[in-house]
Length: 177
Image (cartoon, rainbow, N blue to C red; front, side, top):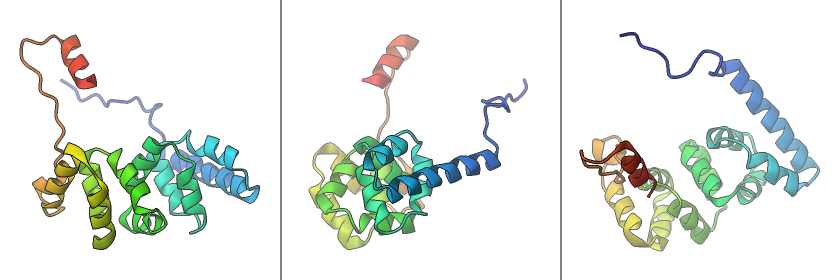
């Protein structure tokens, strides 16, 4: 049996192409900021992958970061925060009110939420954690109790249970539920 890569070479972007795409994104965003065109900024940013946007935030000014985050759809904004490097996340999170930040953290999977809260200052993390409610808040607290580099700190508390007598269609439906 041969190992077949999941993507053909044509489907995988070369590193240079990724960088070109990110450079083009930065240029378009800078032009939108220069023109003070938030509608265009919203259209541009909401069309990109969270990892590309997390990279973009490293290059934005302190005044631009909160504006860029505000124009993102909430699920995308949450995904972008989860993708950010810790230093960029702390910088961006400084300008987000705790109740807004808790709404974004609430959009995340518990393991991503724990990672984000673990990267914030203890004070900000505690403030956001106090605002979270429900079962996921308990799961996030449980994950935060484990050191970040241990299995408990890396795991997710979400899982799908399927039985051996389920059909593939039933299992897929269970995952979507």
